[in-house]
Length: 481
Image (cartoon, rainbow, N blue to C red):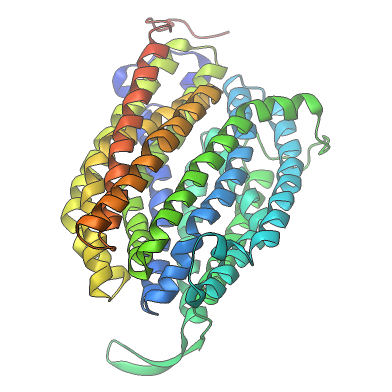
């Protein structure tokens, strides 16, 4: 069976070995992503039982939270990519030096982002156009999550370092653990003390009755426990990267920070402008009312079941391409680029079919409100058509990240979402609102999203083909000395 060490050793490999390695690295990452989605489904289902307004409160600030989370995650990726290059070259001492400095830089940056989030939390729901009936809940929900950003950022860093070193198993297992903990904590914190019947036996289930606040606290507690576990394993047990018992400085060096930021800064800027566009979409949706806000939030959660496997395969692509690049093997860079993109499009095409068929049941799981269920089902079936091309953009982006090539892909993402999705969504939302009803304007927003994702996938495929055409068509036949 193929092993990632043949990349580092420069050994020849067959297409079957390459596909097998890509699939074996992708599977744990996919399971990890799916565990996170299951956690979101459970959260959404629990909050959905509280009614339309709590669901709308969370939906109102969710895109803003993605902006903060994603910016912290993007900053950590520059260090992870540098580690994958060092591991590919078998320079483990250099990889450990990067890890030490990355921990310090991540803590400092995340504290700055946290301070910004705390400052804007009271006003944010009002800026987004939320009604007075939901702004208080939305503000508390947002505040709790941004206060946990330093630990969440360290979780991103540790998970990214492990994956880029080829260890997909531990991050996957720990994320599954986080899912289980989230269910337990949310169940205890969201609902009030109540009588519950399981398997014919009735007993009193304790509960804090905190509602939306409990949903935020439950998830944050689960994330903090997972972050501590992930960081402990990385620093104490991961072969080649463990820094326990080794010497080195945690003081950031200008040269290393500069190289990491060269990779991370375009990713962070790209994520910021994309999430800024998603926030703008929220502003477009907010005037459509609480039903549309809730349906939009639940549909986004449901759709993530389709695209998160693509992000798992994208993680595998970053690892494989990054280590191949670090090992000086352009042939494998090219091969893994095509293999992972093809794998991602295949998996997400299948998931798109499943999404189209099961959309009504997905929405029923998350809310008992029939109007939200009906509207959410309609927009999910629109989005299902975009999944194959969405996969192409996700995985191709992972390929480019593995090469440390982030500036042009970031500009492509920025241009696609701001120049295609946002203006098209604003126009179609108004068109459907005037033609049918205000709530129906949400369909126009999701049609715009579908069109934009197809366009984005096409331009990423074109760039991947052009970039790969300049790489070596031949495989090295000898082992490196």
